[in-house]
Length: 190
Image (cartoon, rainbow, N blue to C red; front, side, top):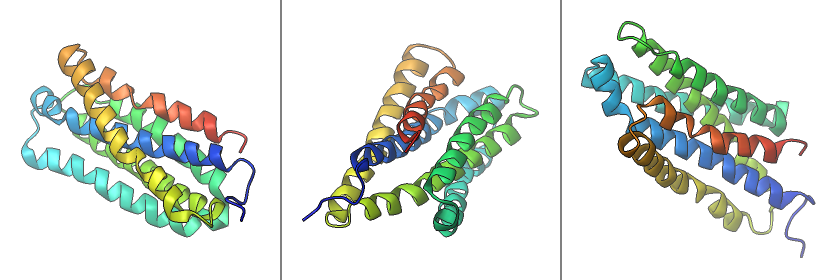
């Protein structure tokens, strides 16, 4: 019995793992800096909740739209879209500079980031299920172990770089680009 349907299956599995890990890292980093945003920009709890909510609504739109389009456009194009979304979300988020503009930058930065995460989920799940038809559950479990691992790594990075290191919020937040660059390289040419 053949375990996979493609010769590069393990590379694709680990690329998907790294993509979801990047999503978890970024999600935890953003959650870890909400207090900093509140004190730096004077946000109310409702404003922070709306920014956090953009992280959930963006994910929903990404996974629903990506799930509908994945077979029409292909996995590669949606991974490229997610990568662009991750980079654009960083640029938008880092545009927050004053209390007057911060809310809009952070809200839309969070939404775009979450949309990219949802798009990656829409790609990674059917990709892994398709390339490992005989052991689908086993490999989907491996794939999804990356989310809690990313959350742990992101929380530790937020604490060490931001709280202990005292680098504000932009330096720790940029840490999520490390696994983002890794998944881009792993998917490239596949």
